[in-house]
Length: 99
Image (cartoon, rainbow, N blue to C red; front, side):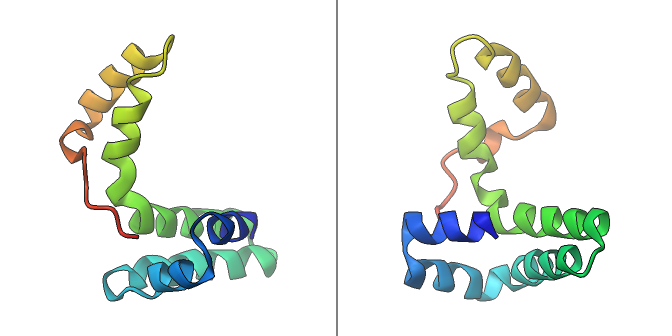
């Protein structure tokens, strides 16, 4: 719930609604809100996993950008860079931003 509030504060309510309503992101949106509902219905572990899947589908395009930024962190950046290269996220840098 706080994630939704924070996202709305950062990019605004209209852009938040447009982001979650995009046709190519409907599966992620359904998983995210379904996981949130499961958490509220007292199934926290399963709800968290479903919500995590939804977040990965919704924000998976940003992983390469985030990985590129994390490489520049002073002390742990080189270690993050090695992990990013092993996971294969390095090729996803400069992905098209959805908003």
